[in-house]
Length: 310
Length: 295
Image (tube, rainbow over all chains, first blue to last red; front, side):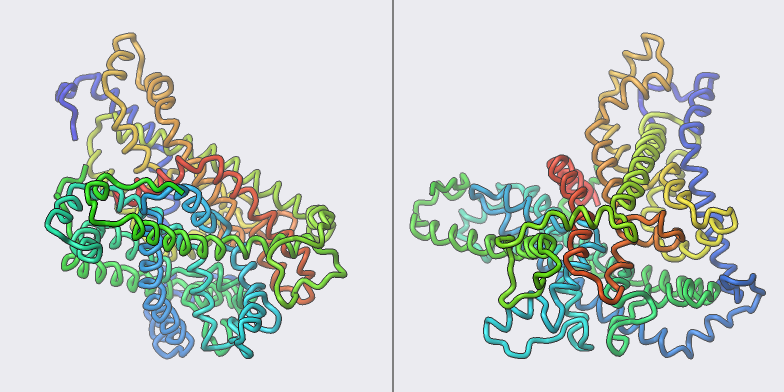
């Protein structure tokens, strides 16, 4: 957006300004080149070679992609990851939204609760995982001791049980639901109060207000959190690495063999960088597809009050 | 307990006082349970860390708060253990944090200033590219970046973990540029009339006024670096160079780990972010929220 105060001419002053601008942008240009452009081209090339950690590769065409098609672990990791997306995204959105509705009540002390509930969001993922790994220990973890004292004699063994490993990861994720709630809270506080006043005059109850004002007005925020949730779910790595004790194992019966874990195992433990690059391309295509699907969904369900961006 | 009510409700005498009280207790009850869900695991971690080697960490029923043992020596041992000195890991991580904060504050404010205030050919196109890179997926670049850094001889050094922060970050540039655009242009004009060039305007007018947004950038950089796991996992080779996060991840998977030491190490990983969070709380939450809304 050109400023009205500047003359549109291209005098020596304008050229000097341009030079200054490019100078200021120099670090970004360097980053684009070193971290983006070159790696992107390189990535496309590597995925077509059998490059490895130990020796440089040669061009093998689409062989990596063909190998993937016949690789049961690739399909397994895809299945695990998609199941995680389907489980975690709605769960975390709902948890964040519910939490923010509670925090949005006009009662004293809300600030304190907001502070407490946001704590997990700033903590190191590894430390949080280590903590829950110990808490959810099947034999003697604090959670199971609690469940036993509440009368559940044989509680699930969480990370050691193929059916409970993923729900255990979800419990760990719910501990951090306050991170999303803060964004929802800001969205809630941006809803103009006069809408609720008008609805109250029309005799709308709490539920009707939520359904017809809060949800539509909040839908852009819900969309933002959902897109982020899908991407985070697709890329989950650190917690799984810690839980399964390195990338060689993927939980009981590979129930925690997430895509990024498999990619890391292939690329950096087995050293097949070419194959891992091909895996990364497929992951990217899936990611773009997911985000595109979410955008499609958005057009039907997200309500924008105005088109104005700023 | 006195309950402040919204203006809307106060004009509605239909809602009886009792019902409001009931609602408030429900809300408080739910929030209290949730706060316990957050705080009890932290309490358990502290309890376990404060136990001497002889006391069992796993008890029935579990101990959520330290009441019996206060073995602060465990922390000293975790920090100075010659095999796994967490003091050293913490110092390594702190050094990375410091360099990355300098790098990201300097580079991103320069880039943001150009986009917010300077006119040049291709500005809109370049800004479009910047926003597009916000959506770009990291994993594709993972392997080629690794190979590039490897071929540059950077494997096993801290360079791959710090150099990128000097090269700008699309998210931070976006945040700072939005903030700089709210600064009145009259201030630039006044400085210009006094003979200031772009560098002086940037350095003496814009930068000081951008301090709140720069704090957000610094805090995010702190948290991102302190908590980073993937970078150190890929690039660090020598255990002497390890960061806290990577040291923890290798400690937990080792057989026969002493749980009290592990929990003490875990607290060492958790305390610095907590302190920074409490110090920068208002700006941080405001910054996160504003980003969420601008989306």
